[in-house]
Image (cartoon, rainbow, N blue to C red; front, side):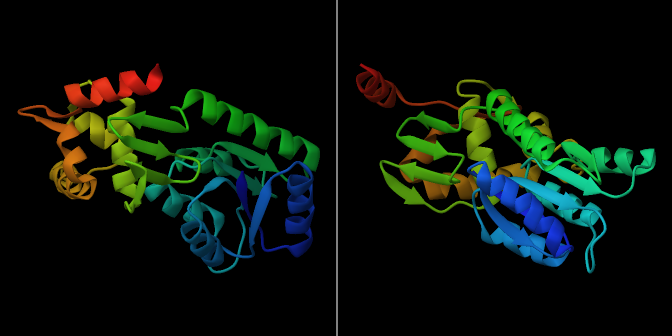
Length: 234
């Protein structure tokens, strides 16, 4: 799994990175908030972010806030501060762990492993297959009939949510709360726009996303696709 380590102190980055590499993780480094955001969006399969609070250009809080606008990737915040207000701010922004400096690198790696186990177990499966569509969450890829298609981040999250809830009628509010997060106050019509684009990219498989008038949407495979899945599972 790939981990992004963000800290403006080179020695701290090396210390953390070395321990992670020794525990079979792949590591990407960034020395400030701006570089961190660039690296995060350049790489499609980052599994976790270790983020320092006090950094030049863009601090850790702002980096976390921007990441949470588009991603639920686990984030561990590192800080020399131990003030309760700092911890509360971090958690309000969506941090998963708050670690005060100085810390034991071994304990940090243990926390990394614990979070990744928890998010993998608590979340949906890392590979979802239904109706000829395959979602690989670890590599952030979508395959249709074995051919990869390109989706935006929100389209990927939306399709994942639909397939994880196959056969369930989902209201627009439920979709907003789950895909756009609970703090989103935008117009629910943004869902309709994303669904329209997603259907177009899925081609004939876009018909699996059914409109439930007066409610929202439901992902449902056709009888032909059910027979195909049944045959694949035998």
